[in-house]
Length: 170
Image (cartoon, rainbow, N blue to C red; front, side, top):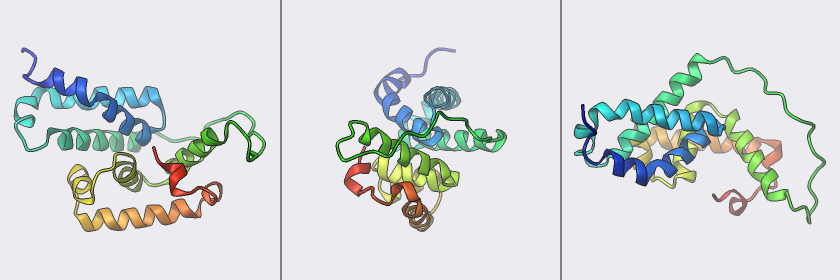
């Protein structure tokens, strides 16, 4: 079986964005790369049909999110050991931005997978509510309610209280 027409171009053009989404969903580069590869392997046999649709990226992102959800359900999530927690950052700390990003990523990992997917797609990938609903195969109302619940949980995280919207921008 030969390579489907347009598949190589799609992968070359959209892999960085898909990898970013996968990394935000998994929190780990190696798992994100595996997730993107697995999602692309799943769509490859049906690419001729998919690429003729309105927006093949929506379909691929849906496969990405559902595959991650399947992996998430299968694996036991134990505590992850970390090094000592560093001292609090000062106003002149060169690592403050990295610590803020780490706090945001940690808070994202605390969200249920559906809420995490909505936040990643809406705010990191800058999709509209309608586009997010298409990717997740749900209603726009579900996207809105999941976004509201997720933002409430994120705002309640103690490490994120001083974080402003400008600091979270990708």
